[in-house]
Image (cartoon, rainbow, N blue to C red; front, side, top):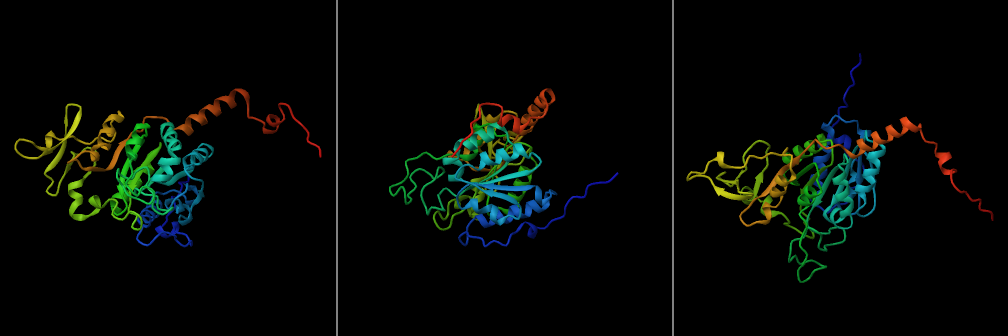
Length: 342
């Protein structure tokens, strides 16, 4: 009996000879570095990886990954990636997309890919701005944001990407930050291990058109007060002195101060495997409320829903068992035909 040998790679094996065309200091560099490092550790043959993107700064990603890939059209990466995953379910298909590409023109494609539970790994780069087209507001820009396209401030209510994903019944939803390299790599590994749709929002900076987009989360002095790290099976605690927590109050969440009779035993224990999406949905909306932290980590990881590509494969096998393999030539000539003469 022979045992298959897993490939041994280094980060360098996933780097290309292409000149990287991102602005110096862009958060995309940190994400690229993390993805290249993680791919080298997954034990997957390099020729089994495919990176698919749409349009935007983040969508240059396939050029910088030494894998197969497609740089497609605006907003359509989930649709093209879905087609590939159905045709070749053996491939590890990843999607690199931005908040504009994914949530504006590509919004419907994103929703339907998630509800179908296609086995894709989606990396949503969220810098709250359109960077490639030089600084217009995006679907995640905050209300009142002054940009080139909204000189007096945007009146749009922004999307919450992870809330949108959870609402679409995504089976894996997570969030990380470009500069939290250890956390980002760990989150990407968890996404890679998930069998269905894995949707990871990565908060990143655009130092040219939206510098400081997430500085209340990334500044060392501020992050402990504004972030709660989600760890499965552990209570939701945050604060510089780890003296604050989240607990249930009826059907809602509340922030409490530890002490004066309030202990860790009173706090909500994170359960990323909760069968109902409502729990993760509550977590996704914490950051929008005064005094609440932003959750970072895996909000939901639910494995008990079949993948779209598996259902399609089963359906095809059943039909072929009954009717035999199809004949493309016969199909094309099976109806009315016309001969066109000059």
